[in-house]
Image 1 (spheres, rainbow, N blue to C red):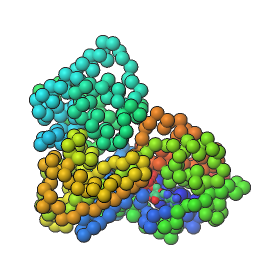
Image 2: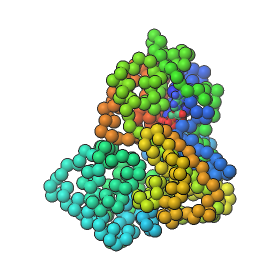
Image 3: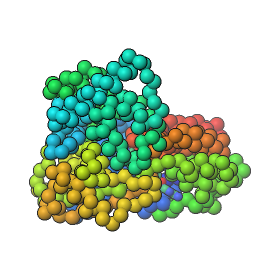
Image 4: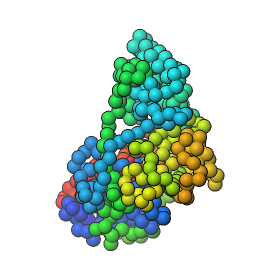
Amino acid sequence: MKTAILGAGVSGLALARYLVEGGLAMDDVTLFEAAPFAGGLCESKTVDGFTYDTSGGHILFSKDAEAMQWMKDRAGGDAAFVKRDRNTKIRFDERWVHYPFENGLGDLPEEVNFDCLKGYVEAWHERKMNGTEAPGDFARWIRWRFGDGIADHFMDPYNEKIWKRPLEEITSGWVAGRVPDAPIEDVLRASIGIRTQGYTHQAIFYYPKKGGFQAITDGLAVDLADRIRLSTPVESVVKNGDGWRVNGEEFDSVINTIAMNLLPDIVEGIPDGVAEAMRGLAYNSITTILLALDREEHPNLSWVYFPQRKQGPANRITYMSNYSPGNAPTGKTSFLCEVTNRPDEKCEAGIVDEVVAGMEVAGLVRKDEILFSDTSWHRFAYIVYDHELESRRETSIAWCEDAGILPLGRFGHYDYFNSDQCVIAAREAAMTLLARAVRG
Ligand SMILES: Cc1cc2nc3c(=O)[nH]c(=O)nc-3n(C[C@H](O)[C@H](O)[C@H](O)COP(=O)(O)OP(=O)(O)OC[C@H]3O[C@@H](n4cnc5c(N)ncnc54)[C@H](O)[C@@H]3O)c2cc1C
């Protein structure tokens, strides 16, 4: 079964590895990759001894222990990884606030703590007494769930930085299970200064000792090297009897991991309505800025959130040099700033200055310690759950499946997946494809 995989990010690579490990002949698998390297959003870059993850700091963690071990084993095994405790904070004025925010109210200035607690209790009371239903848009949902204080001081300004659009345009459905949900007793305790733990998911994570997160996709790619066509964008996919022609070459099956938004320009015969649905799937892009520092140590933190407007456009920084000592030369450190952009828009030239100015206001860096900065950009970074996303997604996936193109991956299937979930989906897809190959 000659199989074409479109895109060699972690989804495409994991699928190819599972197919080959499941018995498909190596020569029957071909990956097409537009970039000159494999890895996609898992890319890492090293500049003058400083390594960073170009789409934002990545950690390895999974609820599926088997999938996580599978990833580690293909990238050098346990010995090639460092194990870290997740220690995340929110920066508010000159303070470190416990994460999640509602478990950190006691760390806030007193008046802000009061506003947040008052709003939280009022919102809780309103839900209990009047049984008000969860509103359908994110802006109203935030106030319904957390109250006005947390909305004004944290949720609204933070989410505006991430989503770059009015929060009314985003649905509340996607937050279920993503935004931590603390019991009111914990919030009351936190507010008067009794420490409550809150969110325990990803309490421990793993990170490659060397090479950044891309060491994982490099490990997946190594045995497939001859089968990955780098710098080879897929330009045409045309139905050919029971199979397909990809860039003019014949295949029995096609699996797509590239963003569905791009398919109407690549796949022949997509009806207008479906093409419109695909093109309109909402997403945001990301710009990341590494600050390489002449400084020996950082606080013992993994990453930090920045909700305040005065802290500049970055919504999060990751202490890359805390992730692994291999990420910075001895005696030096670094952190990586993340800025989201409207779809397809790159940041303006002055973005580095704006980000650095914000970090100075937040008290995280002094200009004279910055050795250099390095900037990266990824077009498809965040899925945006606007009110049309679900229907566009359903239409797009249904057409692909009917046509016989298997959609897979973060933007190939439009799922808010981390890399481990991409691997789990690839494992399932491989089982389906291998069963199909057996049936001939
Ligand atoms: C800010 C941020 C933080 C994240 N943090 C984490 C984390 O901590 N841990 C974690 O596990 N995951 C994290 N993720 C998610 C993770 O990066 C993705 O889930 C994963 O990398 C997606 O892999 P993919 O293969 O599905 O897609 P992609 O990586 O997007 O791969 C698609 C590939 O298709 C290629 N392509 C595009 N167009 C064409 C074309 N025409 N022809 C051929 N090839 C083409 C691209 O170059 C790319 O290589 C994070 C993501 C972001 C944005």
